[in-house]
Image (tube, rainbow, N blue to C red; front, side, top):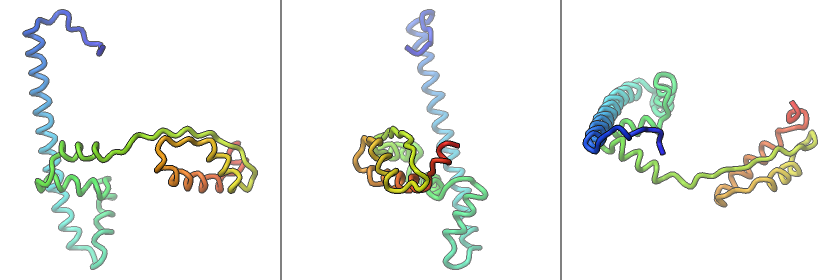
Length: 160
């Protein structure tokens, strides 16, 4: 099943090993939560300073630039971590909400269709006919992407 061999373990040993791993996992989650709180506190202070130095009306742009340049995270992730630090949520609660908000997984099967140098609507319709979306609500978005891509591609580009 999982590649682990428990044949030499007694029931008592199995219970002890399971409990030890549960305790280690609990400590790990607690440590992760503490790290998120600490990171959030740093971000809250950084935001306070960035906002203080930013020109009027430019706070959001300055904050996003700071996050990109110094933290390599996005604005949403920063807000999430700061919310954990403020006690508005927990890391586990945030992950649970993210999992609830995820829609169905969509798998697209694309087939490259050769077209003339002009690309355009003919190529789009030939590509669109090869795509079978599993979720109907994504069709409009997909068609826009395929249309834009089809107009940019030429035979020479596809052969390269």
